[in-house]
Length: 71
Image 1 (cartoon, one colour):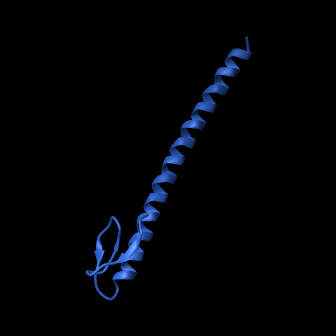
Image 2 (cartoon, helix red, strand yellow):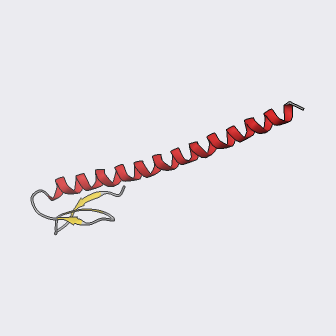
Image 3 (spheres, helix red, strand yellow):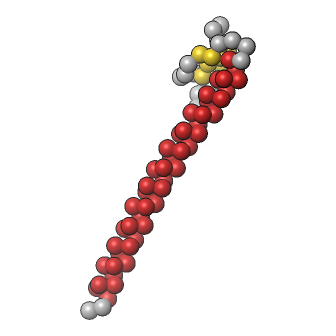
């Protein structure tokens, strides 16, 4: 995440919208936390996808090994 800074218009992340007004900093912080959570969930989803792919590969290898050790 980029840095939070105060501008003449309000509070803003380096690469994000400006949050004006007295509650601007609060809203900017909440926005940053939300963006971070989304990034974390996307990373978790990819890890779960990779885990499932690995699990399927292991199952196929077990079947392959079983078929070739029964001979």
